[in-house]
Length: 347
Ligand SMILES: Nc1nc2c(ncn2[C@@H]2O[C@H](COP(=O)(O)OP(=O)(O)OP(=O)(O)O)[C@@H](O)[C@H]2O)c(=O)[nH]1
Ligand SMILES: [Mg+2]
Ligand SMILES: [Zn+2]
Image (cartoon, rainbow, N blue to C red; front, top):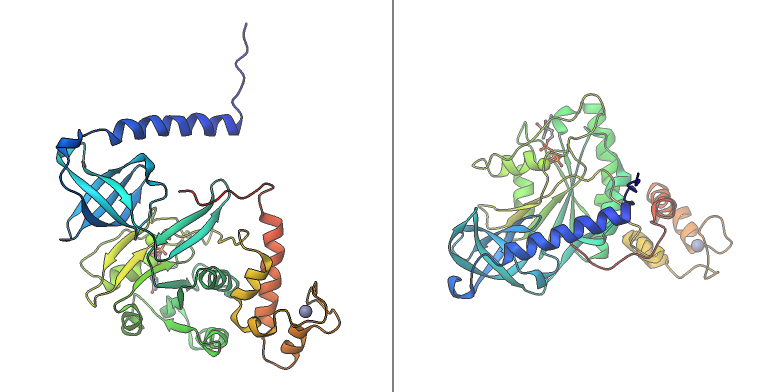
């Protein structure tokens, strides 16, 4: 009797990846070259596995296949594509090339290395809420990631209708720290339409992305800003207190004010282990003037003599809360880093 050996995780991944490759090959060869129209410019508004929705220059959306040589393709990418002579199983064209990205928001993925979330954006709206639980440490993580790629952050606290006066004051105090650092802070509610005017002003004529935990109300905010859309939303689970990962792929929408807005799927934990420690410190903007000012080059900023950062905390230039948050990020980075080299960009 021959015993069938169970495939290891690595073998399984290779089998799946080969299957995907075969599928991709079949799919990108649906049309002969003469059955494809001229090359046109387009924007990726959403990406689904081997397909992507491309918006043409006239605003029509075409679901397309992707040429194998394309590499990573995400919402916001500008592409060159060609329409097929006729629709084939819902597919209407082929994406042939991607233009250079002017910016991208990235996150590390445990298996795939650094992944782009969206491209060609100006601004990242970090959405949080009191349900699921509000935490400044999540805000800090996102701020570091946004500062790292040189984008403009906006901090949005949604669901303020759930707060009584005392709770609201407490959160306003916490967020005034960020306003003091020069960050834009918006208080919003999709139930009371609070803060949507402020938000609209910030979104005007820019390409922005909503990021944040599942269930904070990113898609509900898009629905509130664009009532003609009816994007799926789902209540936060009463059992776990967490969002239910309702949005599964990022999608770009056009705002009436002229801006563009990308709704993205909530992530359970936003990791930063792809960044060097120095880069994390740089992401805390108030630490920047004090970096490399400590007496010892390898200063851990934990009671070391001549520590410039400790002095900055003592003099009130840096808040203890943000510094503690910085230290916590370093600790969790070490604990969560995969035990191998991080591959490059891959999507
Ligand atoms: N009370 C209150 N509830 C809100 C508000 N905005 C959204 N919600 C509710 O929060 C829940 C989650 O909203 P979603 O819009 O699905 O959240 P999301 O951030 O898009 O979640 P994912 O797609 O899973 O990342 C829904 O039940 C919404 O009705 C608000 O301003 N106040
Ligand atoms: Mg959503
Ligand atoms: Zn120091």
